[in-house]
Image 1 (cartoon, rainbow, N blue to C red):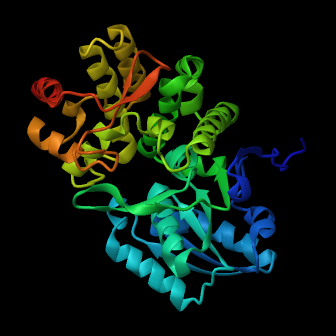
Image 2 (image 1 turned 135 degrees about the horizontal axis):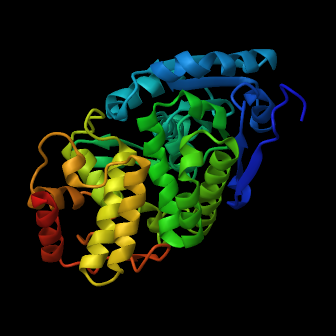
Image 3 (image 1 turned 45 degrees about the horizontal axis):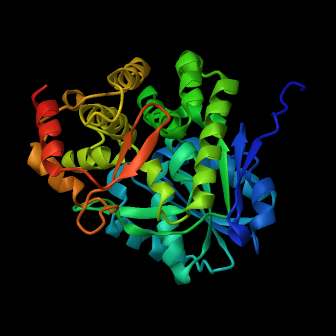
Length: 377
């Protein structure tokens, strides 16, 4: 490969029949976005939703690519942060799109992390009863998780992602170069979601992550690309089997029942906890709870916690700054989880690393005892 020439991106397909779409993973995809967008555009008209931080870093490269291809565009930059995923910002985004005259035959582009992707996807799902959109995720977390699978939504005071819709993108462009602009904290928050795929059903991938953690953290391009592609393939397979989370897709929520409750308990304050950190703590708790119930070897729970801790992620309630509500209040927050069925919590627990399973057969007293012990630790 000659100097200045980009490596060809890797491609993962989400097999959903007529709504199938491709995920491209590689460097410089934002600067080459028009090349990938043109085949899925019905007319050369787009609107870009981003946040103020991402706009300063990546919007010029995207708009230059669109300009060079003769694709018209407008953009709206929102405040960064989880609190942007709300009704007020949803109204702002949809009003902007209508003011721009965006039609069903146009394309909405989500340029940013999971907050922008979720909010923009939801706006596209309700705009004119459904408008096409493209995900250009700029964080590791969004590249391996939220940009793939069509889950969109906003938060409410009752909990995370309780208002939303399934709306699949037409295309996902995961530019690995964008990861260089992330803080270590943002990168590690995404790494928690990468680890999740090994813990769900791929012990060999978890073994690989243990062996390659340093390379991934230090920016090794091949290691990072492999981790992203492996994660996207794992999620794409699950989504193709269970698009609307009626069964096996719930496994992708390993750690999230605990994690979402912790996010709500901290009022989605990124100074205290961001989503990936909540997932990291949640996965440790899921394995420790499984071990307490006699479902999982204790050494596997120890191993999971040790790896996430070595990565630099929080792994316990005591790692969250400030005061948390007690066990009863946390159980109450879990009861608002969107996966509750007939009033019963849905938990993703584990029989071991790579052996996660779905259950609703959990005694609330066991859960309260477990949380009380963690609270006191």
